[in-house]
Length: 230
Image 1 (tube, rainbow, N blue to C red):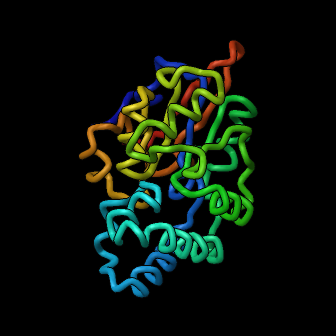
Image 2: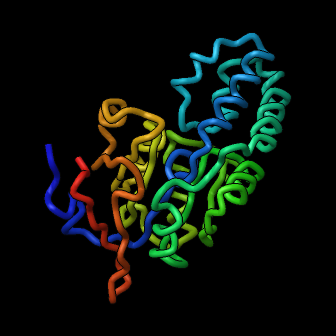
């Protein structure tokens, strides 16, 4: 069903926009797949089991795949593989423009990657860094727990209920919704059906480039919709 001409958020303004990184602002899917495939091969694990962990911190996934005493070693090995593989990592269409339009104090990134991985991928992509970033290194409970988005909002000094979360992963959408934020899902690493099935997506678009963020004179953020959004 089509949304109103300027989208489902036409009657709302937001205090901040909280973005996921991988698959939302940065295309790193090739690097992710290569790193995890290598890691799985070394461990004798079928990589198909990884689908249910999409959007979760790597440590959370690994803890469900290896013995407890092996988690730390296995995690460090994966992190080394991911930080070293930056081939093809680039900003997605509209990502740079979105962060530039929002400016300082109105945007944050909350990623399931660690701080070293975040730094490597942002540098490789040329993405401008917002002042507030939350990584898996900064929290206790990762997505789908709401903590990453709650912390990002707190660091910006705003209520999560006044924020818009932009996510590509089902687990991330669940985290944003649980934090009390409005949610905008972007396609790329999950299908429209998978995103809709979470019940946590207020709207779904092809990508960040399908919307435009405008800071009003009063300092609120309005979201303008592309006609192709569904």
